[in-house]
Every structure is written in structure tokens, then in C-alpha cells.
Length: 511
Image 1: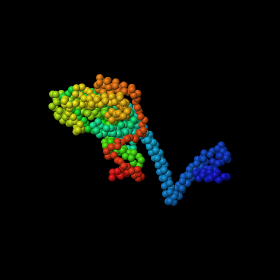
Image 2: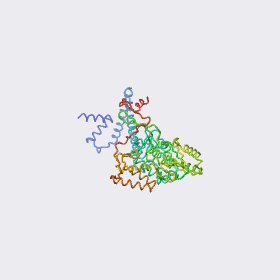
Image 3: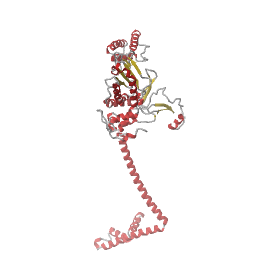
Image 4: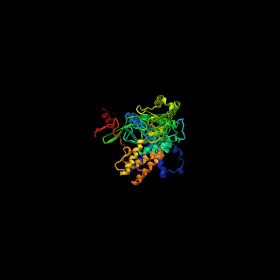
């Protein structure tokens, strides 16, 4: 008999009894056949005997363990350890399943919603309650997913273009300085193509649907500097006021209030406001990497297509109050962006000081600032200008501009466009003079036709061909051109500042 067979018999005897095993083997081998005689009593007795023997063996084993304290403690610890491991495995599997479920739910939510957009601007993203307000026929949007569909982008793209960081390695604007007519420079923040496309969609689908006050002529459909100036033709007195830092005065909170007033939920208004605003930044380079540091509150950038429309909507109450104050004193009122104009006949000419005081009070009450050096009072005997156009007897282009333009056209006809310029512009001079001729024709069609025909002859002579140029972008998304003379910019950055993190390196500059 083999060792394995012998061990099997021993195990069977240990589990029941020797007699029971012998009987089972006799039945199996045919030595004891059931038909030879009744075996039920013997079978019951043997089975009962085997059960009792098994219980006795178990009790004996327990007694032996109790006698050996160390073995008993080891057995208890082993059993508890096995139970603990089983419970830990069960908990681990349950937590992994819950974690997977949460990850799937979070991924699904990120595809349909935005939960965080940066420090200080994310508090309202959980609030999707609709605001009671006038929708003015603009498309209703109740959540972020519907906003993304309206603007024809994904929720991820919306999150990327609206995320707010105080220190960033990405910028969505190209910044440069443009000379002012009165001297100095104006900072222009031109949005990158992806953001610009999104802002144009907001302008076309939302902001253009909101009516503006009839006194607002800047950046409004069917209105221009001509319609703005025509209201003040032939008046005894014309008063011009300018609002200082017009676009920077319209902060992120005010823009968000506009969208909330239009009826959008707070989370939708938050995203729209972040897309339409941008803070002033300092550009620095450290360890070969470029950073943009925010140094002001977010506000409307001068250069974004949405900024003028938002100011027109925001200034509706200002325009309404200005019209009321002007009418009470016998004045006419109009506004082109930040340029405010009043005019009156002889009967109201003595109320100029009172009109200025009321206008300044209204401007300050509406959250704007009157520029202290740009208020002009023009009487009938002097040249009266409104948004760069003369309004003494009719709307016309200033005489000295036409004289200079006529002289330039004569010089081009005589010796060609080489070496000549118009208002400081030498590049694409033929296109520039054509644009100014169109401007003159818009203001004064009869006089403009004369100049336009003359310019047309010059263009034909020099083979000018009208073309729309879209130069290839040399800057990647996230790169911009900062103005060299931005105040408080950090210059002279050393090439190496150690191996510390960026925030640690900033301490060097604070010193």
C-alpha cells in the first residue's frame, strides 16, 4: 500500500472511527452485501459512534491547546489576523470601487460643468439658480454645458480660456503700446485667436441682442461718430467731457453684475465675466521660462471685441440720468464710448457750469471718473469739435486735415508713394489713403467723392490691389508681447536663480 493511500485511511479513521471505515471498505469490496441481512441498526450505531468519536477528538484537541497557553494565544492571533486580513481586503475592494465610481462621476461632471476657476472667483460656480431679470431676447442658458454649446466650444476649452491665475505661464492676450493723438501711449490688450473667436461669439449671440440707450453712439449698430456729432450741429455752446481710465474702471464684479442682470445664473455669469476681463500683468523671465504676474483687479481690456458693448450696457442708467439732467437745463446729450458731449442754444448757454456740476456728480455716482484735463467748453465763435468732427454749421472733417490730405495726394501723383507717410504711417500707404478717403466720404459724401475718385486714380496708376491679409502667427498660444515701458515691470533678471521653486524665487525680487 502506498504512503498516500495509507494516509487517506488514517484521516478517515481520525474523522470517524476504525469500525466505520472497516464497514465502508467491506461494503465497497463486496464482503458484506446489504441483501445478506439487515444492516440499518449497525449503520446507525456506527455513524453515531463515528460522530461521537469526532467530537471527542475535537474536544481533546481544544483541551490540548488550552493546556499550552502559548499555542492557544498563537491560534487566536492567527484566527484574528485572518479575519482582519479578510476584512481589510473587503474594505480595500469597496474603497477602490467607490474611488472608481467617484472618478467616473467627476470625469462626467468635468465634461458638463466647471467647478473651479481659480482663487477668488470660484465661489459662485456652485450656484446655478436662475436670476430674475430681463433677457431681452438673448438665448437662455441655464448651465455651463448649454453655454459651451452656445459658444460652439467644449467645456474644457471654456475652462482653459476663463481660468484665473495670479501667477501664470500662459497668457491669452498680446499687449502693445499705441500712440495717442494727444500724446503718450495707450496700452492695447489684443486677445489671442482662440479667445478672440469666443469673445466675438459672445458679442454676436448675447451682447448685440441687448438694447442700448439711444444716446450711446459708440460701437452700436447703425451708429457712428457722424450720428454722434450730428446732434450738436449749430449750437451756441458745445461741452466735451472725458471719463478717465474708462475700460479699467469696469471691473470683473461690475461685468458679472451685467450678466446677472440679464438673467443668467451665477455660474454662467462667472464664466462669461472671466472671458471678457483681464488684469494688468508684469512679464518676467526666470530660468529661461516666462511668467505673467497679475498686479491689478480684472477689468475690461482695451482691445477685446466685447469691451465696448459691455460698457454700453453698463452705462444705460448713466445715459438715462444724463439725458434727464440735460433736458432739465435745455441741453442735448450724447456719448461715444468714454467721450461725453453736451450742447445747447443761446437760451441755455448760461447754464454750462450747472450742467458740468450735474454731469460730474452723475458720472461719479455711476462709478466712473471725469478726466480733470479733458473738459472743453467751445462757444460759437470758435471751432466746435465732437469726436474729431467739426459741428459749427454742419458735420465735416477738420479743414487742416483735408488740406494736408490734399497736399499728400498731390505729392503722390507727382513723385509716387515712396518716402511719404500719412499721420506717421508709411507702411501700406496706398491702403491708408484709401481708408481716409472712405472716412471723408462717410462724413461728407459730396466732398468725399472728389477725394475718393482722386485716390482711385492713384491706386490704378500704381497697381494697387485690395487684399485681406492674415499674417501667420509667430507666437504660440500662451506667449505675448509686453510693452517695454509697462510700469513696475521686473527687468534685469539673472539667468540662474538656484533650484528653488518659483514662489521661493519671488522672495528675491521682493527684496
